[in-house]
Length: 408
Image (cartoon, rainbow, N blue to C red; front, side, top):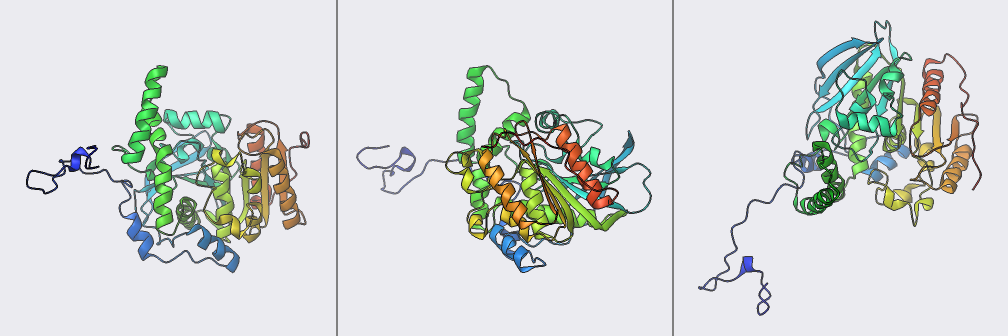
């Protein structure tokens, strides 16, 4: 910087008085892989919900209307340990092609109830739904996510073993739908350099997934800013992809369109709540470790959460548990972990009381579990029993948890 002129050296005037900026390389795209995203949102009307209550949520999230999915392609199919797993792909109206996995009991006859298994955020955008599926070869990042958040269990595959057709797909900004951060945009690159310096100081050699996830964590702010400028949100774009995946699931042969449900842990639980509120085809759904009141997140807990939960203006529409009243689903299970680091206990208990008042006559079940922000094997077993009872109708569901913990 020249102290006399206030101009940077890159913009110093030449001898003839004309500005001559130094040559610079082209600035990297801040939305690489999604350069067609703005046009898609601008040219497509808002998602049209089936009820006024659902439409208000769609408008608050800014959910774009999805084009009918292109032909679903089967990439490969494998039968192992009682289930058949098929890798599918389909192209939405913008961005990279979507990968999903359909898992169903081997040799199943007749239409099966369908479940959309929604992966968590987990700070892992390198992968997506692969963390939920038993695959011939799992990427180390999927194995790490499964071990850390799902008690080592392949949730989607285990649901299929109970007699369901399960679709687990990569949603907007994750896995096959992730942004291309090979050349990080300006702010992301700056933050990533600091992280890499810390790794070097600590003697850490990051994997490709570690590098991507670090960059994606910083880049989420850029995605949220872009979405806000376009009149949508990260949660709205994720809901767009989830609604499209629900259409794919409902249209697959051997799936009973009248018996559809969804399930998710953490950010996947938020996706489950939003999807059930937006589309009346969801009859039964599970929200795990993603329930509290908005007030309880302030002042200390909001910082721990991503843009998936924090859509600007959403609170004006209602508190988080109140959004469940916009769903046409007949049954809801919410699972709480009382030592969850992301939610204060009083917020979870207050949300539970709100849900009890909103869903009388046994349509809502809330269960409290010991432990932190993990979808434990016992919690998964309860969730599977709930889906079996509500979508197969083979039994009456009763919560497996008698643990309530000390009241705060």
